[in-house]
Structures are given as structure tokens and as C-alpha cells.
Length: 310
Image (cartoon, rainbow, N blue to C red; front, top):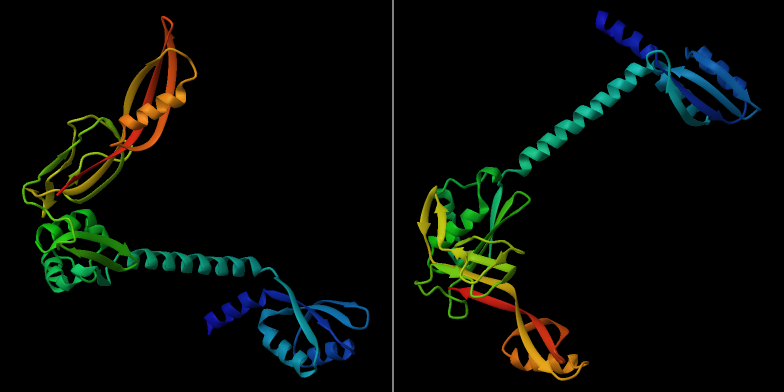
């Protein structure tokens, strides 16, 4: 009983202000008073508009009476001595609710609820599932406990029927793409364990389906540098594996031509085009300098060089 009295006292300190429109407003005021609804700060604006404040405890009775008498009601604001406490209580509830929702979403977003398989290699779904379970990866495993890059390598190294594996998180699903090793798919020859650069240049792209990349896009490399090594870490052990990869390098080759006159840039470019006919040319730049009355044209050809292993 004591708690109810405290609650009523707390709520009683909160008042809501309403704007009422309609006819015969004096009758409405008398009716509300006669039915036990206490009104505060009563202000009339003409014959059709009234602004009053009502205790929060009386709001249901207030709405029932005004509805019965067909008046239009619009809430203006809440106030009163206890209103700051109500505002804090409401804000605290919203804040706590937001925290709970965020923490719940964060926690469950990091959990594997399902597996999906795609690609023509999905006919080996059962074998791959068994391998995942053997590694301790099953429903309700946390994504944070799974190294997807290593998982790709380990699945690939444990199934000779596959030439490519991709593992990606999509919501709460672990999506696994499997590609078969067929005559239409580039297959491992069993003897390739590394890929070295054949040219000087800058790495444009690198795709490693099996093995470990030792360089990144935009890295400068020199001829002879090791780009992809045939190693993988499986169950915390480093093992030697075959390499299956493709690396694109942007290289530059220069050609020098000598002419007796200036203005031969187009001719120099044509000569360079002829000499670089076996290149995948993406850009050319020509410069000229005069030495002892002779014009030397230097054509720098930028070209793409693709290296593959596997």
C-alpha cells in the first residue's frame, strides 16, 4: 500500500496540457469538475478554444469525458514538478533498450547459424561439411574463431577434386564456393611450389587460390623476387602445398631511336609499337634530346605482364 501511495504522489506531480476546441466550453469545465477532474491553468481563447492542464492520474477520465461530449483534443506538452524525473526515466529506458538491442545484435551477428554451398564443386558438400566438423567448425561457432583465408587453403588441400575454394561471411551464414578440378579448369601439375617474378615492375593484381602471397597490390618487385610461396598453415602446422595463382605486373620497357631531325615523335612511337608487338601495351611515353646535332628519341612502353602457376 505504501508503494502505491508513493507512485501516485510521484505521478500526481506530472501534468499534461491540452488544447480543446468546440462550443459551450463553460459546460465542459463544470462537467469535468463535477466528475472529479481537477483543472489547472485554465485559459480561454474566445468561445471555441480552451487550454487546460490535467494531472497525469486524471488523463483517462479527462479523455473519456471530452470524447463523450464530442470535443477536439490536442496535447500541447507535459510538465509539472515531477516531469524531469519522468523524462529521465523515459530516456533511461530508451538508452538501456538501445544498449540491449545493440549488444544482442553484435553478439548474434558473430555466430554461424548456417552453411551454404555453391559452385559445381558443391557435389562434395557432405565431405566438406565433415571436414568442417572435424575442425570444430559447426553451427553456433563464432566467426571470430575461424580464419576464413586459412580455411580456404585447408579445404582445398584436403580435397583433390577441387581447384578453388572461397569462404565468406554473409550475415550469420558461412558461404562456401567450391569449384571442381576438370579439364576446363586450370589444374595443378603437382610440381609447382612457388612463383617468381619474371620482370621488374609494380604489382597490379594478385589472385592466389592455393599457396601464400608474399606481395601486395602496388608493391614494387624485381625479376627473381618470390611472389607466391607454396606453404599453408593448417591446424597450426606449416605444410608444403602446390601453388595455383595468377599475378599481373605493370612493367616498363624503353626503346631508343636516333633521327637527324626534330618532330619525329610519331615515327618513334610507330617503331616502338613494332618492337613491342608481343607486349600487352597499356601506355607509351616519348621524350627527345639533341646530342651533337643528332636527335635521340626515348620511348618508354608501359605494359602488363601476367604470370601464372599451377
